Image (tube, rainbow, N blue to C red; front, side, top):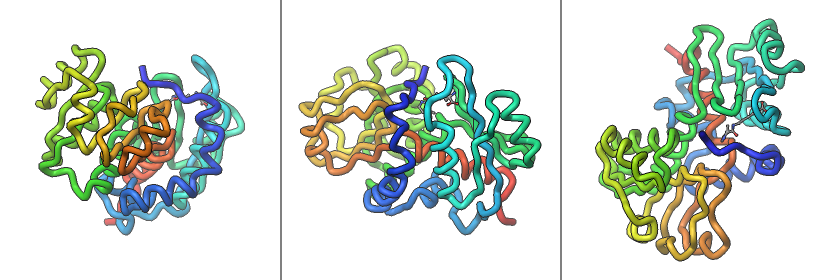
Length: 272
Ligand code: PYL
């Protein structure tokens, strides 16, 4: 079960979208749009996002609506050049509202899955894949390429597992650590990667780390000058740990939602 965002983690997203974009440019050489396109395997000139109507539907199931979550998704999408709005209604009525308004893409999230449906052909993007692909592209940008590089993946869940698979396909030398050894073994068997038994040793022997776990990371375990691509929530570093790293790429929602938007748009809008 993925870690759930809280009101507190979401409340500042809209205000900090500009600084997140600048962080990405300085650390990865790509802005949010370029990064999202790279994660989807296209370049910005291959797709025209302007004028695409996007609906974001609040969903009240499970633990209910997260304050500002839908508004944050709508703003992230707007920043990519698309037209987006949160529906007045929630749940099924909100979906019907988005479809009646002619939305080409509809975003919805419950406690288990967050998807963006392309209403032209029914294909959809998913936040777990998009977050993995977006943060792998970010690490690739920050590291100057991942081929033949050692990368440690923390967390063998949906995001960490997908990231491991993507980085193996980029010929990185991937090692995985999860507190649940069985999850590490399942992923290792499926993707053909090494397993780390000791978190401290693994972190101290890797310059590049993909962190998709919800656990805090002790500054004692951080290798001086290491680069973290870290979608894991909550933010796992203390001030001492931050100072030891060369770069930390992290945001609570922006990169994943931006990749979802570009991927779902690419299902119907790729230029011939
Ligand atoms: C998409 C985030 C990224 C990490 N965990 C995922 C999460 O918190 N999922 C729950 C999202 C619930 C949204 C709520 C609403 O406001 O519509 N149903």
